[in-house]
Amino acid sequence: MSQIRIANKQDEPHIRALAKDALASISKELDLDGSDADLKNLEWSYFGHDGVFFVLEVNGKIAGFAGAAKLSEDAIEIKRLFVQPDSSQAVQGLFDMLIDFARKMDYRQVECAQSAAEFAPASLLSSQRFENRGGRLTSNI
Image (cartoon, rainbow, N blue to C red; front, side):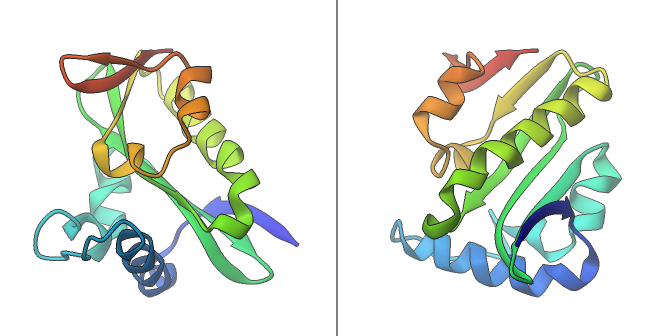
């Protein structure tokens, strides 16, 4: 059984372990003191910045995650998006929840950070009309 839910503090170690494995799959290392510092405190990094962080839970274990935080009054940035290969069909559900959240919060634009785009299927980004604008993947919603 699988479900998508809002992440909580108890999920953080599992999210970091999954992120470490995801980054290793593309020959990168988890850097909690640098580019991955947002994963040390999800509450502050996402919820504290008018954003959200979801987890995909499959049979009681975290198998994916998606997070976005405010960039400006009109824009939100998808900073994290990853689903384990054996749960890849669920990436659409996580992505749809981020877009739905952005609309409900009255954001007009969504940007996809490189850290999320590395794991997002191109078909998923093109279905939401993401375009490369000045080196950033952006979509109006």
